[in-house]
Length: 565
Image (cartoon, rainbow, N blue to C red; front, top):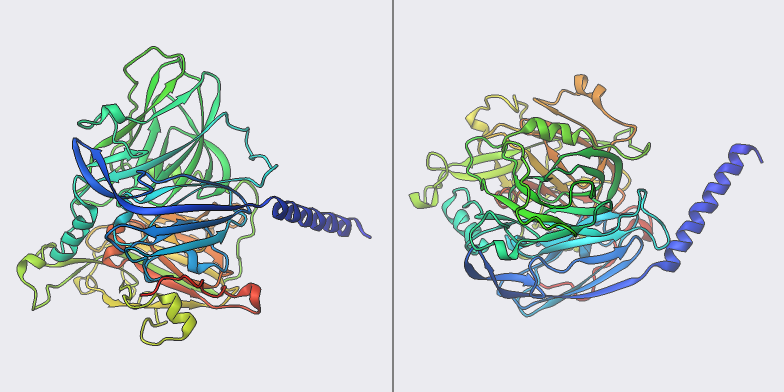
C-alpha cells in the first residue's frame, strides 16, 4: 500500500468506528408536550397565553448528536397548532418538520401528533417553536444538542451552560394582533416588551421581581446559548463590562472570535463563552432592537437579565451601552466575523443558480373592500414577496402530502428562478413593481443538485434586514454585500474555503447574501423570512427536492398519525 492509501484506509476505519460508537450510544428521548392556555402575568396584567406544559418559555430539550427525539404533542388550546424543530435537518423525515400546511395539516384542538426524528451531525443550540399563525410568540423553547457521548466540545468545557431565550411580549393576544392587521391591511401593532427567558426585566413596570438571574463564579468560564425567539425583531445582545467569545451558531461550530455585542435575527442562535473576569458584582445582560427599516414603527424598549457573581454584595447592576437602533456598521462587522473552524466542502460547480429578490409590496385596495380594510400607506394593503410572488398557503391539504400523493391543484412548480423583470433593486423602484402576484408556487430541485441562491433585498416600500430561514437544510453563506448583486464583480468576494454554515441568514439591508448547499434531503422545504409579519404577508416559497435513487435517497412514508385536514 502506498502511504496516501494507508491514510485513506485509516481515516475510513476511524469514520466507521466513530459511526458505530455513535450508534451504540444513541438514545431515544421521549417527551410529551401539552399545548394549552395558561395564565401568565407580565407588565402588571394577567393574560391567558398559549404555552407548552404550562411553561413560558416552554421546556428545554437536551439531547446528544445521534439521538432520536420522539415528542407527542397534544393540543388542548382553542387554536390549531404545529411545532417546528428549527434548524433540525430532518433527513428523510420531512413529515416531522412542522410548518402548517407545508409538511402537515395542523393539530386540531383535542387532537395529537407525535414528531419522530433523529439528530444527525449537528451540535450546539437549536430551538423549537409553533409554526401556526403567531402562536410562536409564547410557544417556544431551546433544543440543546451536545456532542456524541464521550466526545468533548472543541473548546474548553464550560463550568455551566445557560439558555438565553430572547422573546417578544404583547400586552394583548398575539393572535388578535395579527388578525387585526390582516383585516385592516396595515402593519401589526408592535410589541410592548422584549423578554429574556420570558421576563421583561427591571426597566419595565411590574417586572423587577421576576427578572432572570444568571450566576457566575469569579474565574470560571460559562456557556450562554443565545436564541432570538422574538417574533418580528432582530436584536442586539450584550453583557455589561464582559467580552463574549462566539464558538457556535445555528448548531454549527465556528472559528472562535471575541466581541462585545451580538446581533441575532429572529430564528438565529449564537453560542458564546463568558468568563467571570470582572470585580464580583451584578451586571446587566441587555437586548434591544436592531431596526433597519426606515420610518417603520418598532418596539424601542430594552429587556434585561442579571449576570450575578456569587460573592457579590452589590445591589444595583452595571448597565451596558448598546449600539444605536440603526447601527448597521456594527451588524456588518459582526456578520463578517463568522467562519467555519476549518476548510469545508463548498459546492463549486453549480447546477441550479437562483436569484431571489425579497421585500415588501403594497396591494391596491380591492373594489369590494371598505376603506377600513385598506389602512396601509395611501389606502393600500401591505404584502411581501420573493421574485414578485406572494406566497399563499393551502388550507385543505399540506404541500408535502399533495406532492407525495400526486394531488393536483394544490401548488404549482413554476416558481421563477430569477425575477421576471430586472430592475435597480436597491434604488428608486417603479411603482408598477410594488404589487406582486399571489400564488402557491414551488421551485423543483433534483436530488443531489448543487444549489446557489443569491438573496437580494429590495427597496420597495423600505429596504430591511431580512432573516431568511430554509427548512430542512444548513447552507454555507459564501458572501454578503450592499447594493445590487453583480455576478461579475462580486464573485471575487466568495469565500469557498471556510464560510460559516447556518440555517438562517440575515440578508443585509439594501444588500444581498449568497448561499450554497447540496439538495440531499428530499421533501417540501419552506424558505421564508423569519420576521413573522413578513411570512404572514407572503415572503416565502417552497423548495421541492425530489427523491433520488433508492430508499436512502427518498423521504420516509408518512406516519400513521399524521393529522387530517
